[in-house]
Image 1 (cartoon, rainbow, N blue to C red):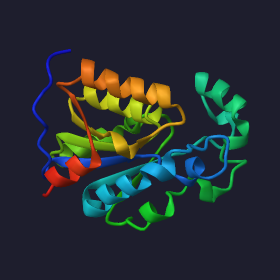
Image 2 (image 1 turned 45 degrees about the vertical axis):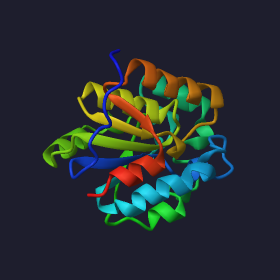
Image 3 (image 1 turned 135 degrees about the vertical axis):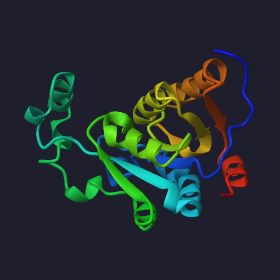
Length: 202
């Protein structure tokens, strides 16, 4: 809705929110995202330059399907081999190049797709005066999608370096980038990692 907006300011009111760049999605598991290694250098460069303003999320499944509620219980009955009781704990860790940035970067564990499923995130960002989020990671059409739509509803400006996003599905990744550009251009800016690095100097 609306016409394309001017580029959003990238300054001290900006935080890099990196979604679920974990071993669980990088290694040979049923949830492996083949694109992840391809976008990792872009994610790493943004995080490295702004480590103190980076929050890494980790998707943390329940111990067992019985510990989930509602449709999540159905979900984990299907994916029971990926609950915490059955996977190696190391799979929940960030991939190595990103893990080395913590601290000063911070880690937020979440039980659902959206980073904002943890209410402390929005409160913490507001307390820091954050108005703009650079969002990277995966998957474009699952956890990134849920985080972006929640952030829009909360009033954050969103900057998406599209070459720092990954998915298992090319078609839905491309469709979402098109959707953001054509329908959410006043709230979401789709750009490149190079552009973010050039503009975000503070």
